[in-house]
Image (cartoon, rainbow, N blue to C red; front, top):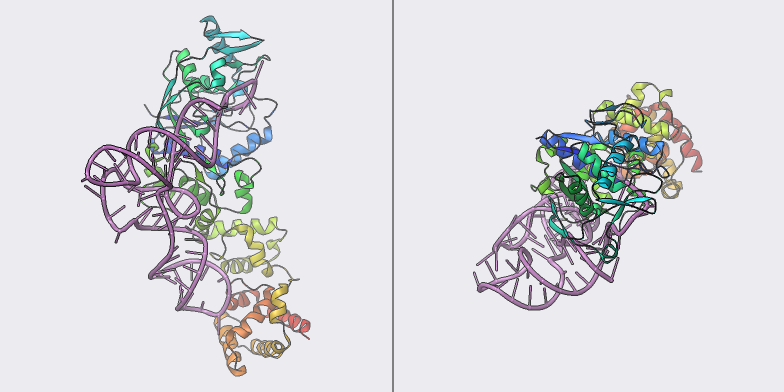
Length: 448
RNA sequence: GACCCUAUGGUCUAGCGGUUAGGACACCACCCUUUCACGGUGGUAGCCCGGGUUCGAUUCCCGGUAGGGUCGCCA
């Protein structure tokens, strides 16, 4: 029998980065085994759920490229789903839960208590055979000792997580429950419920949690906890996916940057680690740089133009050839797309601002005659392309008896306002003679 | 408080009784480049502590410590 796995988030606000990884591991396992990946929305808490949160989850999974074989087609809970075990929103499955509760009630495995229905939990320790953690014998805690039973139907008639989760896993034919380790203790209850329904529980694989860089747990307050944060920062989904794969799972062969196909091939439950992992932004950033450098041209242009637009810079006002030439000088030189407007905005802005500290250092009186000489050399250059300009600058430096750097820095500052950026000679060529001469003139004027 | 999980450089990890403890990120130095990156070379840095078992423990067992999780009419 092919595995059937599911990701079952509750739409209470955002897609947690840990949840994204849980989804990823489930998806990888399904793809590795040729099984089925199911998305089920656990929206039983009407007070905390929202339509927006459902969309955040759906869009987040799509952004990551985690397509589901069964689940919602849209964020509309009452809308059609994909697959024959739906609906895939728990809010639409009330009758199932009601029927199951009645079955337990009639068999004396549950009872009413203050308007709610409680399940008669076993008093014996429950053994959980976990595919990741191993055999866990879960005993009752002292508080459970005094009252081991738990509510499965609230006094207002709404079913509770433990019940809905188990009923749906059962009815949707889930074979492997791959979820966060925070559910390990709950699993005893779930196993007891499966037994009450006279079925064998699915296989369990509890994966370790993702912690903050300082080892504390990630809460909603931490900006890095939300997947949306990475989308907005300008990360590439393939970098995030690759990084997430490496958190709590290892291919065991020292591979770090892995193509998705390779990861699918290698992924399996036994290689999942048992201990929590800290989220390392630096390593994610490294992978981001790796993927950013090898981005296809079309996708690179598209993402770049979009990023400029978000920053209020309309690149469509410029000829396509100019935009592409400008972007070509930037590719592979920055990591996060969020950096791009600051890195290459000078191509599309007339009023550039000089880096204050650099201006103090480079726009000094003794540099004025030097920059004037450079302007003249550029003015009479036979061609305005990178090799010619480089030769002109170096020749000028030689005549002045200074190192090339003495001209390079003020020149870069004059035309870009920055101390770093694309290759100077190439950016001059792209910018064009008119703008370059204008900007050098302007810089000269500030140096009096 | 009880119950459960975990423990290799700063971080992610390989290791499954005998290794000069390997890789990656980060960091440092040098090279390349007279920007910034990229790339290259070299380097600093690790088996939580204490008991066992064993000829021999990073590795197996027990205890401690530390971190994390759970004990809701949240999921």
